[in-house]
Amino acid sequence: MKDDDLRGIRVLIVDDSIDAAESMAFLLEGLGADTLVEIDGPSAIDAAATWAPHVVLLDLGMPGMDGYEVAKSMRAKPALHSVALIALTGRGRDSDMERSAATGFAHHVMKPANIEELKASIVMAVGRSS
Image 1 (cartoon, rainbow, N blue to C red):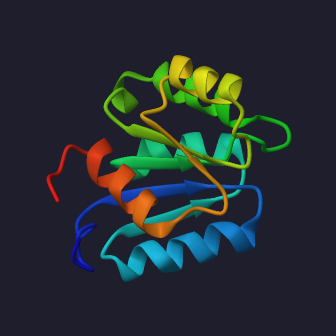
Image 2 (image 1 turned 90 degrees about the vertical axis):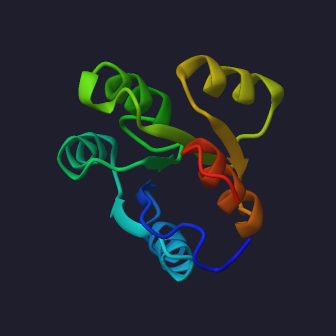
Image 3 (image 1 turned 60 degrees about the vertical axis):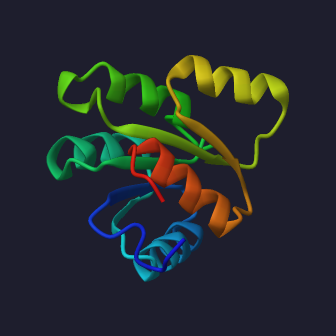
């Protein structure tokens, strides 16, 4: 894949660790993506409704409103039905992956993320050929 494979793709990064979220934004911007960082569920839902991302990278283990709840809230909004959800999480048991798939996530990527795997997941989620 080329370094600009994510050019024109808007990625909302949601993680309660601001350092992790900003680091991910930096990496994805280097690959051409436009990024926005939010650190909690309610802010992420509002941002998704106004910014219209193509992809949401969503931490599952956030305090308060976890990633599953955020995903369900996003899926309940007609304007967000086509947004691709990717779980970016430290939760990697089979039951976690089954739950994320059942909640509507397109992919389940383990932290620390391999950037090539994450890039491929984003490209597949938006239906772009590499």
